[in-house]
Length: 346
Ligand code: 5AD
Image 1: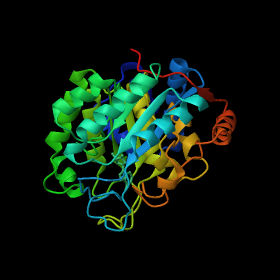
Image 2: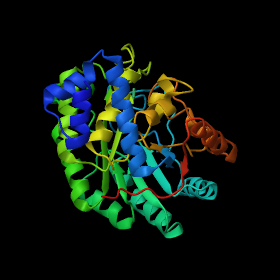
Image 3: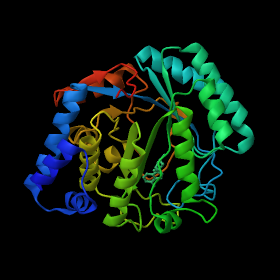
Image 4: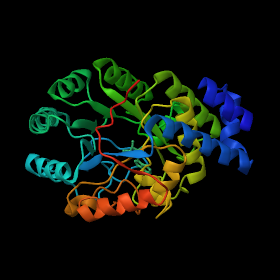
């Protein structure tokens, strides 16, 4: 296994058998070595600074019906909300005062007629905070909507492909959703000039190791600027609510593999990992080569409604207190917050 890790670090590539071995090996020493090498690469590229992104959960209204997701349109048990422009601007204002220089607007897929509102919202944020990056994570939209969002001032877009295998994609999504369309959206976002992020849920129902290798190879070819990975976590009101959660071991191995593959890529240590491993998930991610965390800036009143999965952790970053806690937690492993915008640099 060490030999594979060295090859991946030196050449940023393995054949599919190599990736599979890194994912499946029981060699504990080898796994420790994988994480250690990935961490070294992260530290030589970014020092001990961890970028923070202020996450604003814009809405849990969704026209989509993904079988794993708690805010799928068929879930009647969830109370729907959509923040107002004024509420979003207030979140940004608070976030800016705390020091955040990236805002991530994440939400369900709003009805198509709300596109002009989204574009206007981006324009307003851009006008008020020139020095901040605006990241969107709002799902699939026609190319011209993506173009308008980009022209309005959005810099980055997160859209996980979820799985590169069409049969697996069909197990996780309703028939009207197509993998091809998701991949086309990613290509469009990239050609429009967005910094693009993609990724998967680790351990989603029906996922095999071969599927994950397909995902690695897809991501290798897309060469995104950001890679988001979290364990699958069941949500009790969804059709996949009885499945077992994904594993933190596999999730962190993937952080390390992608760090070695793409030394400069931005990899968040995700809320889902921190939910699966309360207390130390975030640090485990960083120890495996992640270099971003995304604290929640959403108003406290809507947090419970943005329930993608059960038990979702929301770090108390809305207060200066929460940030202090994060600083404190990072310092226990010799890291600190980097308050820069943290754009992808070649
Ligand atoms: N478990 C883990 N992650 C989930 N997401 C949605 N539902 C779940 C779940 N049950 C992730 C998807 C989506 C992102 C916003 O949240 O990967 O892209």
